[in-house]
Length: 122
Image (cartoon, rainbow, N blue to C red; front, side, top):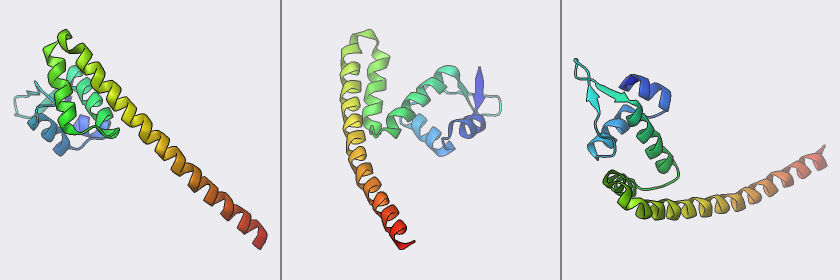
C-alpha cells in the first residue's frame, strides 16, 4: 500500500518537517515520489517510521537510531550488536520509568495532603 505525506502526518502524529528530516538524515530511505514529485510512503517505510518514533519517544538520540538502522541494513551479521543496543536502551528506559515512579509517589503524596487539608477546612 502507499501513503501520501499528508496521510502520514495526519494519521501517525508526525510533522512533515520531521519526515523530511528523517529522510535527510538517512533514517527513512527509499521514499518514492509520485508523478507530481510528492513523497509516497510504503508499508515498509511506515514500519521503520513507527520504530524510529518509538525509539525517539523513549529518548534514544538520532545518532544511535541511525547507527542501529545502518547495522540493520548490514543484515544478520549484526544481530548481536543490534540486540546489545536495544538492551542498553531498554535499561535506560526502565531506569527512567523507575525514576518517574518515584516522582509520581511524591506528587501523589502531595495531592493526598491537599485532600486532607480540604476536608479539614469543610
